[in-house]
View 1 (cartoon, helix red, strand yellow):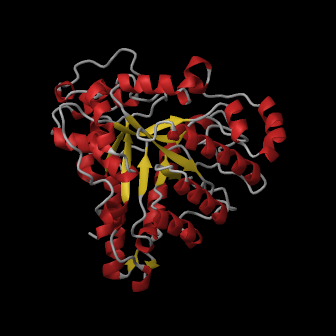
View 2 (cartoon, helix red, strand yellow):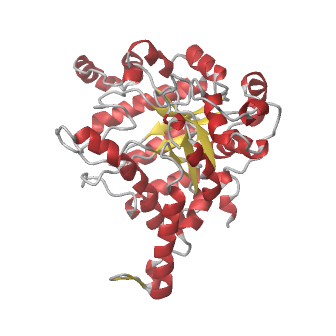
View 3 (cartoon, one colour):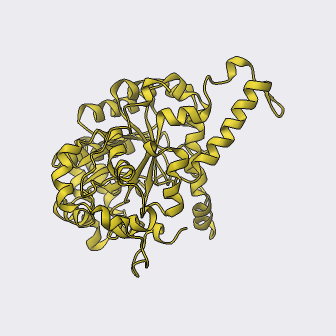
Amino acid sequence: MSDAAEPAGRRPARVTARYTIISADCHAGANHETYRGHLDPAWRDEFDAWRGGYSNPFRDLQGDGRTRNWDDGRRIAEQEADGVVAEVVFPNTVPPFFPTGAVVARPPTPEELPRRLAGVRAHNRWLVEFCGRHPERRAGIAQIFLNDVDEAIADVEFAAANGLRGGVLLPAVPPDTPYIEPVYSSAYDPLWAACEDLGVVLNHHSGGGAPDYGRHAAAGMVWIAEATFWSRRTLTHLLSGGVFERFPKLKLVLTEQGASWIAPTLTQLDSYHEQAVTTGRIGELRYRPEDVLARSPSEYFHRNVYVGASFPSPVDAEARHDIGVSHYLWGSDYPHYEASWPYTRELLRRSFAGTDPVELQQVLAGNAAGVYDFDLDALAALAAEFGPTHAEIAEPLEAVPADATSPGFHRP
């Protein structure tokens, strides 16, 4: 294993009487009026017209609950009560000119790109302010688009220059977007180089990458049934495309995609790699020596890739041993309906009771601190006041809270 593998995700986490918890998966965003103030003035008239016809479809962005996305006092108080003292911040609300939430929206067409790009840049400017109010607690993730590599690099540079330690959100590329190259394309090498040179983390969140299913009664159910496939293939594309061979210090975090699927996927990819190396063929496909990567897919994974496991069930929690404990980050998914909040202690008991405290502290904070550069010493006083005790989490959960909505409580 190269030296590039060691620093991220391996920072020792000091074990005290209470756990320090960093959620590697939280979501936040501004309301439309606030976004308007961060929008390039040239786009504000068009934004006002767009805003007048927009109706938000998301339950967590309606009514009283929506203020959790931007209200510092409420957000911090609720997470502290849940035992969480720091967070990696993915987008949540709808930026200007988006058809739906940032994580699940399809990429823009060439015609849509200019105004959608103006929208994500308004979000990124807001995010700098949001994280800057509590820099020790928040690592913000900037948004980029892959339509134009030079524009994406500019947004990577913005994130690095403005302290967005969370890095950037790598969009999934649906198969029906011929105007965007797949992520295994060498066209993105300048983007990967910029991320590597600036130490900017790539994050890939579930929810994107699906084709347009059309206006059919079954479209929603089909999307739900296939959503995991479209999200997960980004890992296969990056591994198979040799991205981590060419850019050995690049870091990728896969978030809210589960964890138990990764080891079988790596086993399958490794078998293809071994066959190509030893026989020069995989079925009818012929591989020359120069076509085969120097390392196996699992070697690249264990050097460059981390897993942000959101609200893990016992099976997903156990998967940390298959993929490597030092590559496993815990996340709550606050403030979503699926989040472990407000029962994080209970879900940790269900999934991690009996875990060695040294190992669990790495999962709950040490690995996230290594990847996203959190200062654990700066969080120590907060953890001493709000973190759960070892004894609390060591106690197996006997009954799921009646109003718990997180899938982590209802999956094996």
